[in-house]
Amino acid sequence: MVVVTLQRQKCIGCNYCVEMAPGQFQMSKKDGKSVLLNSNEKKGFFTLKSHDNSIFDPCLQAQKACPVKIITAKIL
Image (cartoon, rainbow, N blue to C red; front, side, top):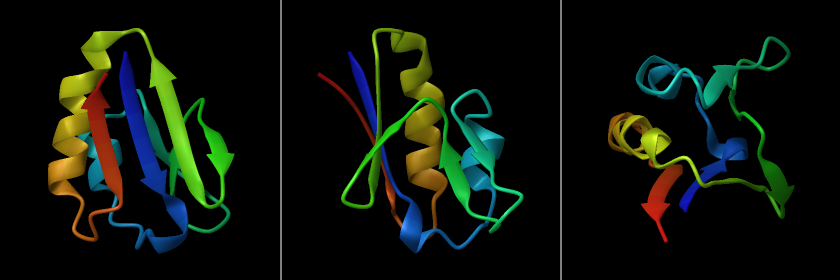
């Protein structure tokens, strides 16, 4: 299982996550911050749990590209 987490409040809107993993991230038209698609929010952390391991590599690239280090991607 792949688990991806986003601390959306700290997002600076650089768009790197969307460029690396467009299937999992998009930019909000309301506030210009990243949105982790199909995620659940708890205490400011947005989490996506997926059995599709093919999303791991793009999300890991998004994690590495994020200048404010607010994305984590891991396989459980």
